[in-house]
Amino acid sequence: MSCILHIETSTQVCSVALSQDGACLCEEVKTDGPSHAACLAGFVDSVLSFADSHAIPLDAVAVSSGPGSYTGLRIGVSTAKGICYGRSVPLIAVPTLELLCVPVLLRHDDLPDDALLCPMIDARRMEVYSAFYDRSLRPFRAVGADVVGPGTYGDILDVRPVWFFGNGAAKCKPVLEHPNAHFIDGIDPLARCMFPLAEKAIALGRYEDVAYFEPFYLKQFVTTQPKDILHGL
Image (tube, rainbow, N blue to C red; front, side):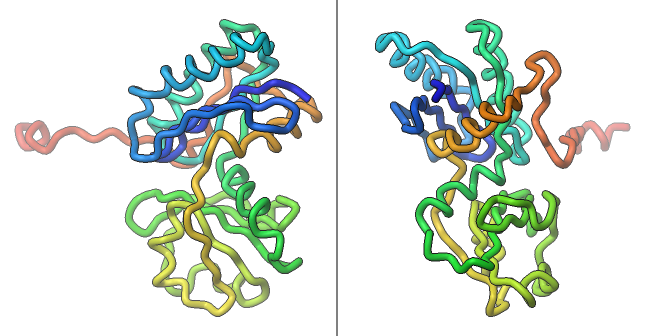
């Protein structure tokens, strides 16, 4: 197996990890962000220094590709690209919602066979970025931006049990009262959980074009002018 540097900056959590042979060798994590611009470079330097001091050659860089925070994703992808250029290694994109499913599948092997997983990333107010997967991470419903209310996902919940998790799930819990709706707390997208998906990408030869790769924002960032400027027009 390969030695992979993993970078995750899609939410308020910033994390970097190094994996080899299916195991996490070291990691750096900050959970009380967003402060990616301030801490990511130091985390990367620490992890790469570990690899260099142990004479471990880097084979690839994996980055969480979204959806998620516009600023966080740009910082993570820009950093990943810089390392790929500097060390002449390929770039791997790991979909953030699939990444969120990894700790659930690893820790909850007692889920029923027909269970669906719904990772949710907070997109402000009652909107979330979400998708539905079966236990083999096969897509059941594509990634989308959903405004969550009492009847949301009713067509799915009527036929399958669903486990919701991620930083968008907590605000949805009071309104999704269907008996098939279940919630798992404390699930964040973390760099140390990226290696199963990154190694699968390597096995499939699924690399990104470093020059042209962009994160999956799902919704484009919209800038607004300050109100005092608008009032003066």
